[in-house]
Image (cartoon, rainbow, N blue to C red):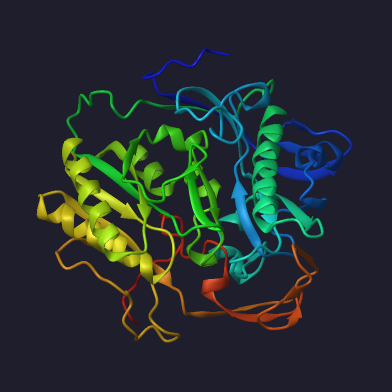
Length: 422
């Protein structure tokens, strides 16, 4: 394996997972991922966790994942991770160079109850499967039980560490396998001989305290100012979610690793992915204005021609996007914001809590309040009941789209389209 060299870009070694099962020993071969519950369980050895169980949920199965918390794409740069998930598994230093093995099409999903975690579901088949990014991955579902009297903060921290370690362990199983694809991700700071417009991605990370926080190098951005990172650092897990509210609007760690807006700009022949700006999402208005002004200053210093702004969370986070768009437009940087609407069940209500005041591009990720009917399923993982309906988790359900995990993802994942009325 090549030694990582800063400034030389990142090489992704892609192993495509085609099937998933539990077995005696963890291994990967020819697209088949086998996970040992015993080997995985050792990664969750912590006094705050009384028990951990594993389940499997693959696309098309009649399985419902209840109370999904976070989801992580398996990745490793060498035995034990080699520096991925900095601040949790690797040292708290910027990654994003050298070689990284990933298990594409697989995820480690934690599921269960935590404080401030809003109820969510993932259906692996049926109409809701089209709405969740986790319905198209082979999911190793981690169910857990809290030790009596253990502080919930300790439970959440142990669960997060265990999930990340398991993601590394699974990717480690493929280190000696021939990858299905090798993808070169150049350093965005390198010159662009084609002179394409320079576009940045401004990603807001929720910072609302315990159980509603997102980590960069293992640390919260709460109280801080925007920071510039290489988009390649996302692939190596520099951003890890510890935020469990607004399920449809949640950005799990897996979607930070595979950031859809970043991915689209990487593939563009007309635009140049030039920078990633990570920003906190404070609650207080003055702090929002300060962060937005600094984000615009960074974009100007980076020489950006345009920026795409994403968010996490509900209506409060609309203001973070709108303010940044306004500040960008003021200094001549074209802006596009990705929003989810809260427009009522029939879609006729005001869609945004806080819209931008200056002209800019706006993309809708869908309507939070729309309803969807889910058929009954054979198996549920992560919980036995749907608390909001007080019904068994395997029953047929009618729920708002707001409950479907990742359905309105504001990082750009989604299958919502627009069409003219018939």
